[in-house]
Image (cartoon, rainbow, N blue to C red):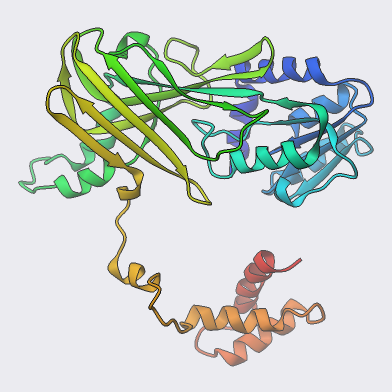
Length: 376
């Protein structure tokens, strides 16, 4: 979820904004129907309607859609733009649409439910021969010299004169990726290469894998792997987040090594990259081999400590029983019946759990929170 400040930064990004406007101008024909996945405050939906679309379905799960609702009214486009708060996978238009467009990427396109949403929209919501924006993203990688980015990962777990061994938390931090911007292509110690191509017009797999082999092009201190993407919105329209390009709102993704490595020109580097979709987000794995004897095997699976108590609760043999929070949730859900007002439920809840809530008004906060998540 983005803040309005974050959405504003996306609108203010000239390269991104102009590319999407140009792509929409290419595909929107008078009287066509359009669907935007992830409309946010609805800026592109407004533009699509003004470009001549007969109907624009604008979909957004978070409350920024209320800003879109006000903007639609302020521009007198209520008859052309239909807003839906939720996920595109839960939406069905009266008939398939002529254009589906979106920008559901994060730093890279491999973000949470992006690919499942695009595949569903292409197969279920888009008319045959309809236009899909973007059409394709290419993912790039290179071994990078990036001391500042690396320091942001590990400097917090340096000794700092404490005479303590802080290598354990350092291992966790080097098993996760970071957000950075490398502006100078010369910081890449190898020739950048494509490791995956996401062709949204035919894509089926939610995972991405790649194997890259390099010879180091100049001596330097390698800190990790830098990744970025090029996009093709429609033929002839796109942009890139590559080093050397103008900084964009997306930034670049940095996969740190466990420790920096001194490389010489001509050294061989072998990289295997995997991004595996788990049903909610991606687990990354990067295995790096540097001749003659260095091998790093890293994964975001090991990026966060998990307590044994939590793991035991997920074991197949675990026999659970409701704790206090579970009992409250169960109590409230049993009373959400389409007939009882929240105040009445809150008053009942206060009586049933006298030590948990000061009065019914405090209980109402909890009841409202549960009702927001589990009721229509």
